[in-house]
Image (cartoon, rainbow, N blue to C red):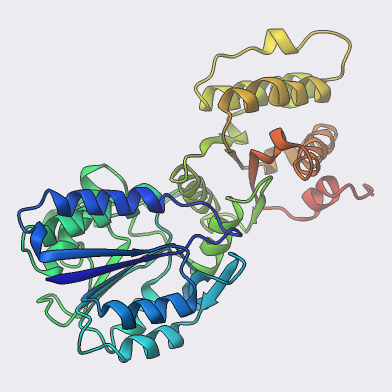
Length: 400
C-alpha cells in the first residue's frame, strides 16, 4: 500500500485557497478508482514546520503532496504558531527530503512558483512536480484530480503528470504548461512539461504568431519576469489593491495586465479591462461625458444592465454621481472583488482638466478602501507609459 501524505497551509495573512475542495476531489477520485485499496490518504492541515517533519517521521509516506502558497526563491509558505505565514527556505526543504530519499517516491508541490523548490528536492527524490508560475485554484485542483485519477488506474508518475496537464486542458484553462515534471524515469529528460516536444503543426503556429502588441495568455512570445508577476499576483488579491504598471511602449504592459486580471479571475474575482484608446474624442472633451463613458464601459464588461439614468440626476457633481454609481450599484451588484484593468491611460493625460479630476477620483476611492467594506472589493490596475503627470495628479501634488 502506498501512503499519500497531503500537507496543506493557508496562513491567515495570505489569500484564501480552496484547499478543502482539492483534498475532497483527490479523495473521491481515489475511492472510486479500481486500485483504491492500494492507497492510504493522510491529511495534515494548517501545517507548521515541526508538523511537516513529524508527519514524515510518523507516517513514512511514499508520496508527498503540498497544497498552499509558494513564493518562488523565498520558499514555501507554512504557518507559525499564530497561524500567520512562515516561509520555509528551499535549502531547508531539500535537506529534510534528503533524509527520506530511500522511501519517498514522488513529491507534488501544488503551489505557485514552486519549481525552484522542485528542482532542489529533485536532487534527492526521483520524481518531483512543481509550478513554473502562478497557478489558479481551478487549474491546481484539476491537475491534482487528473494526477491521482491516473495513479488510481495503476499508471506511472510520469503518466499521471500528463493526465494532470490534460485535465487542465480539457477544462479550457490556459495553464497546462504551468506544472513542470522532473523525473529520472521520464524518457523526455529530467525537466519536462506536456509541451516539451511540440509537433510540426505547433511549431508552425508559433512561427506564424504575430507578437505585435498584446500577446495571448499562452503565447510563446511572452517573456515572464517572475519577481514582477509574483508581486502583482499577490497585490491584486489584497483588499483595495492598487497596482501601477509603468514602462515604455511595446514592453508588454498590456500583456502583464491581462495576466494579472486572469490571475484574479482564477480566484473568483470579476474583472473588467478598459482601454482608454477606445474612448471617442467627444467623451474626452467633457468630464461628465467621460465619467459616464467610464461607468458604462465597466458595466458592460461586468455583464450588468446599465443604469446611468438612475444615478446621473440631481445637482451633485459628476464625480459624486460616478462614485454613487460604483458604491450603490456596481460594487453591491457584484458582491465580490472586482479588478479593473485601466489600459492606455496616457490618453487621458492629453486632457489635463479631466485627468486631474479622474485620477483624483481614483485616489479617493483607494483611500476609502482602507476603511469602508464596499470599497475594499475594488482593485485597480493602472497601465501607462508616461510618468510625471500621473504622479502629480494621482498623489495630489500641485501642478506647475
